[in-house]
Amino acid sequence: MTISSLPRIIETTRIVLPGLVEPSGLLLETGPVGIPGAGQLLVQVEATGISFAEHAMRLGRYFAQPAFPFTPGYDLVGRVLEVGPGGDETLLGRRVATMTKTGAWTGHAVVAAHDSILVPDGIEPEQAETVLVNGVTAWQMLHRAAHVQPGQTILLFGANSGVGGILIQLAQHHGVQVIGAASPRHHDALRAVGVIPVDYADPELERRVRELAPAGVDAVFDNVGGATTRMSFGLLARGGTLVSFALVSAVSGTGGLTGPFLAAIGRALLWSALPNGKHATFYDLWSGHRLRPTRFRRRLEADLGQLFELLRDGVITANIAARFPLTEAVAAMELAESRTLNGKVILLP
Image (cartoon, rainbow, N blue to C red; front, side, top):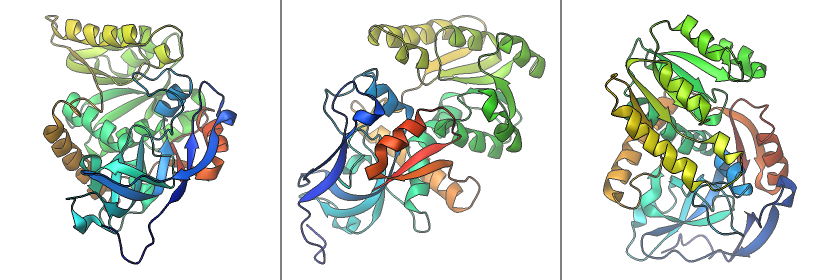
């Protein structure tokens, strides 16, 4: 079914990642839009964004990424123009937030209804975009993986990232003290929002964190991997939890990715079995998406609903570093990869 006042859309503009290229190698193409099948929606995209995943995919270093060429884009927010056969026609004209993993850098997209959540009135598309994948990741790591409690202290790597900016706000709203590991160029901005900054590259980082938390921190959120993960586990207080949520060190290196990912998961299982009261886990946003879809949808709807409520009430704010038209994806990608920003780069079709 279609919105009767709109013609059937035949073509749209999309960004294509053709292979292992620099950001300047991204292609802008125009092509036909598919017709949604059962369980699918056709969405007019209003906002999408750039995350570390797209950087890794550009390098061919994202675990289980599709074969080149493809359209990147982990998530999107937009209006439903069509629903597939047997779909919920009450969604027509409504704004949804959708996790796609790929395919979001486009003017129109056919998406899975199962991965699409209604956006409440009063929330702008780019605001919703900042708390979709980044926000759900931050919420689930903080509350579902680490079970952080008010009054505790956490250490957050990548504190200036899109995920980091949302996690900081959620932690502070929950009464949690945040030690943020980031480049010194971001320290003033972190101090301004009440975070205790530390230099992630400081050879004395371990000693510095112990000065700030002599008994250890209650949780560490590690997006680096390797030696940082081992150090992080040692910095935990008894009963603390290490949450690894990326392997920047492996993505930035060479060789296969399967080994490092399996090693990270195995290490978390081994460390959690040690009789020291500490825990470790590897967080994967898509865990259960295929094998336990009902549970996955239920959690996504509940957690994103909480985030939308906090956003609408002004408890948390959209962590937007820059906005670009979709047609300027090259410049947007170059800026996002410069590592000079505090927040997320938004693309506006």
